[in-house]
Length: 314
Image 1 (cartoon, rainbow, N blue to C red):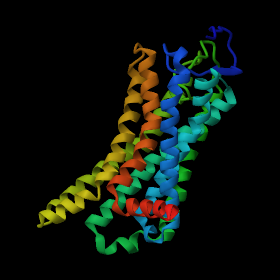
Image 2 (cartoon, rainbow, N blue to C red):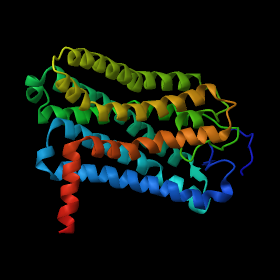
Image 3 (cartoon, helix red, strand yellow):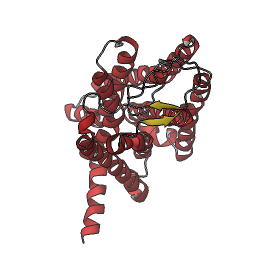
């Protein structure tokens, strides 16, 4: 375990953490983590492949689902190398610049996923509340523009945030709480004033995930109001059924995200294991669960996946 260094400088390396207290079992613990990564990468890869190759799925709802799978793949691949290096080789070191780069991808894909979930809520709102104009509102050109806007929004806000981080000096322990670089975690190790960093970071979270979550909630309030005005119970059930997968995706994304933020802001005295477990749930559970949820709950995706598997067997 690296010792604290009280000199003020930009560190050559930070030291990532595996699972505190279970260092001697890292090789065994890598097995379930490898399984989770394999499920996430293969599941999201399959959904992307199915949507791209199956012409019947070339519709706005599935284009947005492919965006969700892309961001989930990005999140997985952003942490895969550092996670497995720790578990397999006990290689905890990561350079300062590599740490900055990893934060860019982790937070960038996180903000992009939040934006995608908001767009998917808007898609459900239009499909249920204004179905006759659905095709004219969500045209292919508009979907492409939305995709570019999501990428630009998810990345541009991070550049000044990470530049502000680079100006900090570090004189405390360089040991991070997670197996990847996370902005609040790195910022806490600084011995210089981080008020600007903290305020700017909070402003970015509020202006992205915060606003997105409020708008998603508003979308579902309007959807529920519209569905309740439908006379037929069967039609109500069908309308709500189209939203189940998206509501599940929203829950498994925002609950771990909020939990990790609360732990970092108010859980200073929480055991290191709590930080580590919540951090791993935050990054691994959404990419693992989203393809499972959409494969089980969406009949068209399920049929397309089965069609591909059967064609390979025959």
